[in-house]
Image (cartoon, rainbow over all chains, first blue to last red; front, side, top):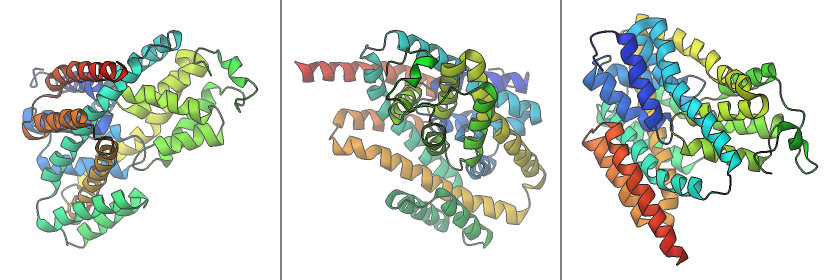
Length: 178
Length: 200
């Protein structure tokens, strides 16, 4: 955890640990990423964090790649690779082990209970992600309105999310969001 | 469909499974799904694995995904490893993982380098700010969709747990491991007790 010593080690430790606590996926861990990267380690400013989130959502591939961007901004290509592997490998190993364990004793009812117990927690985490990202991204009434409109449209329709992201980008480019 | 069947047994009469994929096929298939997946790879993974390649039935896919969803970490990464290793052992898991993560990491790293160089340009900054606002809206819509079943079932305990985690992480900004080390045992205990009472 000693941040000053070696940023690559700090990345490995931060995301390796986070990997095992990201209940519900990468988006659940966004508050923790923000807490560590912005508040504790000062790797990124608030605005850079919002930008990095935007880039990760615009890119193809799994959402987890936001850690690649955070890693790059800390320690270049090495940082990008270390952060990505640290976030993926511990949980991937765990998934491999558990899937083998479960296939041997698949009649246990514990998996279902644990799964049901984790659902509300992961929704709470993702809600916190939404709040923290809204606080970092929406610095004007117009911005908050765009967020609310995107949320409403995505909730009520089956519109491809990419269109909403592009529309947000066009509004931003046009200077509507300020 | 017992999960312990060896790959060969998956070609049982009722399962529309074609021959099990090789390492290169795993890598290529996951790379394609990943590169098609803007805003989440799951939809494309289901399409590729179940509809296109017929490596799993829809039911097997759902079971595998449920397992990967209850484990921590990026779900789709877990899915790639579990899926690949089911067919080709550890090398299969590594091949699927490398396909899923490798190509987009190259793209994102290039974008990161561009951002580090041009991120201060005013027009780009404005555009990214707009994208970010919309992306937050998308995330909020996912949260709302996930909440609907809890509200529909009047799952008061679930809603309280959800609110408690939201407050601890979102408002109080407590560290994630500490919050979950308290919340997970509590939630499992409560869920277990309620199911027991429902049975009794």
